Image (tube, rainbow, N blue to C red):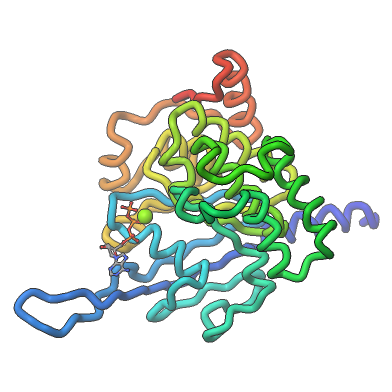
Length: 302
Ligand SMILES: Nc1ncnc2c1ncn2[C@@H]1O[C@H](COP(=O)(O)OP(=O)(O)OP(=O)(O)O)[C@@H](O)[C@H]1O
Ligand SMILES: [Mg+2]
């Protein structure tokens, strides 16, 4: 075997190795009980398991209240699971204790539904990016300003937007700021929880295209939580379907839409499965063709 061949096999093996490995994750909340003053611990996520590989997108779908956000919040260390394991790049995340290491906070970022709630209305939006860079000890002030300008450019915002306040930007522009902040530290995984749900259709298409481009350029992985099945179908490599805290089906995006096995998945998908563009490159091509034909970046339902 030549050295070149060995290098190819090595990088293939690296790609096969999961970046995030979730096993038997169970998360409980204290929920008030009827006829009792004492709340009861109730599991809302039950024995959930999945992997996300480098550069891959796992779509997470399911009815409201099925536990999607709770799963995402546990990965972000915003809450502690009752049991189970979350392994990131071979390191057990649930063992971190109260202080999450800075390296994990850098590697795993989030984009939520409503950017206006995560941006400080009294600060120019550039500070959303420079503040996170400062917190992580990146460079001096001039270097951070430069990185912020680069991140803004990356997400399709202009320099003039840097000094604006959130209220002076559109919802789509605010979400671009949130994405600029999420990518400024060059993370390896971004949890997108309904990241495009609050946006109008054409802006949604543009943001999805931006996230897809960022993935191709940086190799970032996504946990993509969304209600919109058409969107998830076009954006994900694999899709997990949640119902009442459990994953009832997990399959490649193609298989899930072409051969849904679980009755709940079939119900969720509604009508009979349609043809689906195979592979990420083809999905990208379809999105681009559609966006340029319509000039608006709408997502086609193909
Ligand atoms: N902070 C909380 N305290 C108590 N219960 C909660 C809390 N957050 C969520 N829950 C409950 O946990 C369950 C799962 O909620 P979760 O937000 O994860 O659902 P979801 O799948 O993200 O729903 P949606 O699609 O509506 O966003 C729900 O029954 C919800 O009421
Ligand atoms: Mg949710």
